[in-house]
Length: 283
Image (cartoon, rainbow, N blue to C red; front, side, top):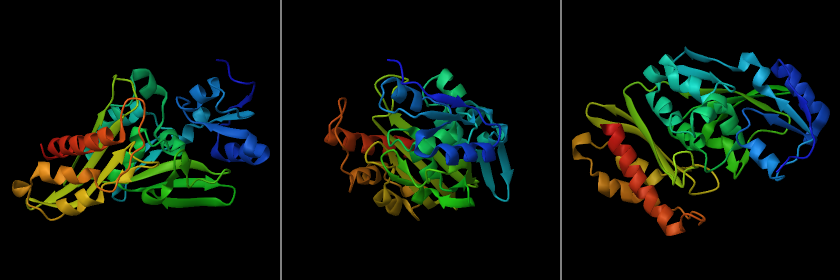
């Protein structure tokens, strides 16, 4: 289908983009890659009067390592993250996870910030970043604020962003002595995940320290598998019983059924994919 008519503007700075959001209010929508928004517009499920394209804001494209963390500009593409030497060295799980997003065309246009701001529970990046831990920096007419990633996702397609704010940066901790992996199940290579599991572990002295496990598409937001995390903490790697631990991934989740998966099948996938992600991490 053809979307309804709209005005297209391409600011060159965050300040200009914020000014446009203030000017047009609820009629404006941020475009940060477009692989989620444009299909909705073509189906006329979304009909913004003004599109504010951040693709021309070059200041939002960067990857920096500083002060024990990695800062990623919101308009940094999946492809840039995937091939970044810094990301591969410091947060290898993120490079591995973005390589599974869509296809090459999607990874060359889609952005990390756009994926998080869209807050799609079936998207890969919300769960991956939730497992990695960290925060996002947002900017509005009254200045900047930092939001912990655990507080950022509020509901399906709903984040803690205010209507007049723009997500500008993702801040992730360095993975010193850590291992991680993202596994997802989909019908075709380019499909959304029916279920996904992101695992991040810190290992020292042969024991698992901090453990973070986040699940994709089993709730309205990324779901932390806290029962798995608690079962992993402090356990010697050699004594870890993966099958028993991964069975806990389906505790306290009630995923909505969909065309390709019942609720019970999604719970089954949560257990299977958590086990696979743990195996990959420990390998």
